[in-house]
Amino acid sequence: MSGFELIAAVAAMALGAALQGSIGFGQNLVAAPMVALIEPEVIPGGLLTASLFMNSLILLRERNDFDLGEVSWALVGRVPGVVIGAFAVTMLSRDGLGLALGIVVLFAALANVAGFQIARTPRNKFAAGLLSGIGATAVGIGGPPVAMLYANVEGKQLRATMSVFMMVGTVISVMALAAFGEYGATEFKLGLQLVPGVLIGFAASSKLGPFLDRGYIRPLVIGVSIVSALSVLAKSLA
Picture 1 (cartoon, one colour):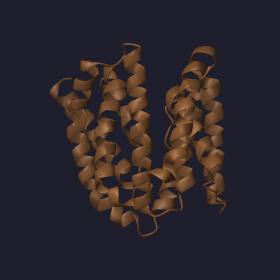
Picture 2: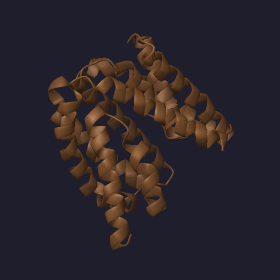
Picture 3: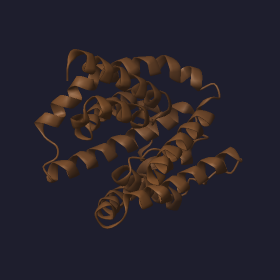
Picture 4: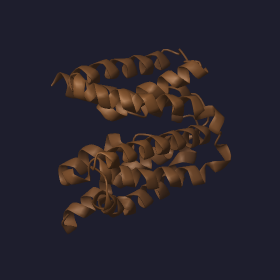
């Protein structure tokens, strides 16, 4: 990347990281489209590298509110979800998958708006993790299915839970890409170029998060999920 392109990519990453550091997800919704226009080679490996740094920082900051048992069933569901998503991409229409997943996420978000709260049972956590794995692999919408389950918890717990879930999911994706020769030293170095943006966004989220914790987390989580669903639906119907 040229100097200007690098500055633009870092700025895009800073915006995405500020959102993710504040509510626990949403980085790729903001950063991925912008970075892809600037330097397509950064997607997906370089962005995954930057995501690992971001989620590690969030987990370190929110470590006192982390509960592995709370997210374990979602992590179990994520693994087969990634496999199903990879298989579906090769066998089914990506647009059809995007349409189906977008509708599911949009329905869940609107149900939250209407006051319906999805119970955080092991079965629902597994299902959310499964949908997240499928969505992240097939159409790039991984955070909202799980975030919907935790829309009503405190901000610190939401960020801690989502950071672990997203970090494990990112590791699985990196391993899968590496197995197919799509991730290596080049992708790692490209991701390192985005780390300054991660650090800037993380620092901003440390100030923004406590403000949003005053009752703004739930509407923001629902809003970001709706935007994610609509963006996937728009791409699928285009």
